[in-house]
Length: 76
Image (cartoon, rainbow, N blue to C red; front, side, top):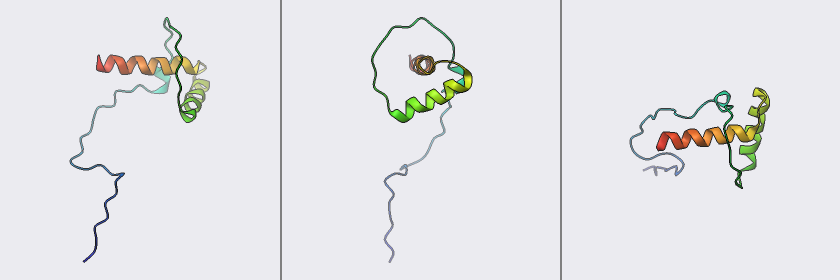
């Protein structure tokens, strides 16, 4: 009898589709009042936002800030 291999990277149980609430990169360029903080992010994340910011002629920090603001708005 064959042994059943279980892939621990795959989800277990019934899957549910959730609404995509994250904005597209072009929606992350709205300027607002800011406050400085220090944060450590993955290098790959910073590179992604820098590339996207270059495409939309904006600053990557503003895009990250807008993403976080929308995340907070979704769960507040």
